[in-house]
Image 1 (cartoon, rainbow, N blue to C red):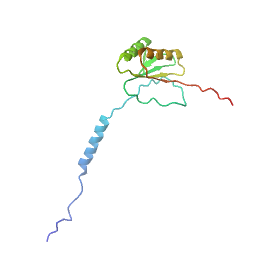
Image 2: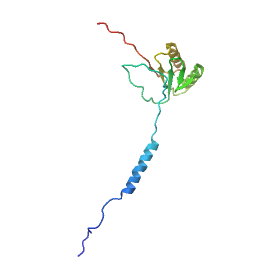
Image 3: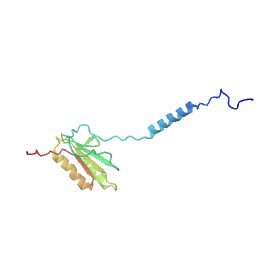
Image 4: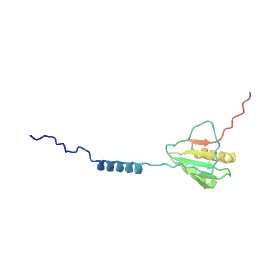
Length: 142
């Protein structure tokens, strides 16, 4: 009488198609992932701080305006003249979905330039303005 199960049968699963599928999924997810680069002006020396939180990613549109130590304005890392910056901010303020402005000022920048940008945002009707600046603590008396 013959046995129903042969001792020589191989019960292993084929691994090659499974590895192919894993690599295809890996490639798909790498290509489908979007990587957002933050607009940072590397020539702005931000002061240190002990309080507050990181800006993080803002929902919707955003504008990163920096004021360098020499008073030069940048928008998204690109230096520009005051008239051009003013035109772009006012145009953004006319849109239905107003952008969120991140205003970064160098610790050596003239405060008048930073105040000029704040005034411009107010004129444009942009209410969401996040500023990064240094708060000096008053010395504690003992």
